[in-house]
Image (cartoon, rainbow, N blue to C red):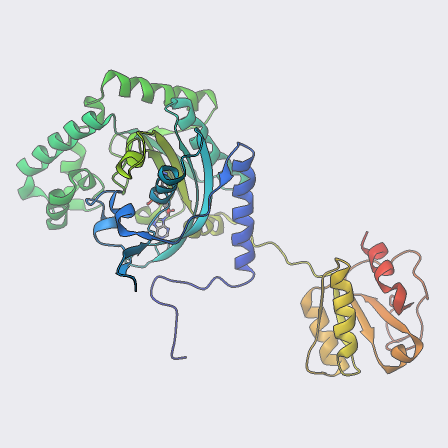
Amino acid sequence: MPEFQTSPGMRDILPPESARWRAFVAAFEQVVERAGYGQVISPLLEDLGVFQRIGDATEVVSKEMYDFVDKGGRHVALRPELTASVCRAFAQHHPQTPWKVWYHGSQFRYEKPQRGRYRQFDQVGIEVLGADDPYLDVEIIALGWEFFATLGLTQVRLVLNSLGEPADRAAYVAALADYFRDHSGELSEESRETLQRNPLRVLDSKRAADAALVADAPRIDQFYSDRAAAHFAAVQQGLSALGIPFAVEAKLVRGLDYYRHTTFEYQGLTLDSAQNALGGGGRYDGLVESLGGPATPGVGFAIGLDRTLLACDDEGVFAPPTPRLAVFVVDTTGGAEALAIATLCRSAGISADRAYDNRSMKSQMKAADRSGADYAVIVGSNEIAAGVVVVRPLRAARPTDADGGAGGGIGGGTDDGAQYEVPREQLIETLKRAMS
Ligand code: HAM
């Protein structure tokens, strides 16, 4: 075992999986840019205070933050999510509203690592600042829904709730705290501790001991103001009008503390229930203000890349893209010609790879086969002397009217005759014709 390994909960994403990650982000970009969202790229690290505004009662903030004092004495943290950073950016730069942005990047949370739960994980997401419109909530939820469909996922369930206006939510939390306190003897020890910090999160308990109490707990919908009820009704009506199926779950509380009104989660039905949230979001009216900006409504979601790809594996969709290589250069004269030809191909926009270390012809041809290239371009000393190269189709059909025809030199006449010689200066033109 080598001395160093990735830290717990952190992973190397290697090819070809890394190409799949890029394709994931590209697919997301396409869905959201079509809807008028522009990308925001913000720092990985911010003043700790930015993330504290997410809410001290949130475990992400109170327990899971990667924070430290930098060399300048600033207390900073690696971001655990991007919504707070986007709100900080809004307060800092005063863009025109509605400000519609999307993002992609890594987040850091000191969680207990397991399948689908990591300490460094990636998210894609969108946020809109400066609009109150319930149909904006619908647009956002629908974009996430469309994105999952783009990936080919079908086993996704949309769960919806509203936490009401700040006053509704506060009254509900107080009622919930009273209820759980009255029954604290029946609560699991963990939930008793959660109750001190954040009564809402007790609803999230997956422990059997808490199940009956949670089931009978007061419901948020008993606390909605007229405005909150109207907003939530409009969101549901809008989703139905778009034909997007959803389930209202009055006990859906999200891990972060800034939500008001609409909250939602996309759950992956193939995943283990403790880690089945592929993505989630909601309204967070008030967060910009708490970061020193003007009172500004906000709504958005984030989708976890790592976890959503696990769901893709489970459903056998969105496989890594197959890398396509056009040319593999085989050079038995030392490698300088391979370097020259590969460079020539690449400059002409033709993907090309080559063998190194002056291996034998046989070993280089094996490498060419393994590479998946469409053509081997082969040079030996005879070819160099004659100013030609041999093109051997490995997978592709032979071009109809190739220059030179099958002939001498390396391998000439030794195979099925599919290979042919071309003058070196016509190589690019010949390859382009063959590939078109
Ligand atoms: P979140 O629910 O904390 O929300 O995270 C969103 C998604 O990120 C989760 O559904 C999950 O897929 C993924 N995720 C979270 N933690 C982990 C982890 N430890 N390992 C792997 N994946 C993880 C937010 O972050 C909010 N900022 C979403 C939002 C945007 N709300 C409004 N706008």
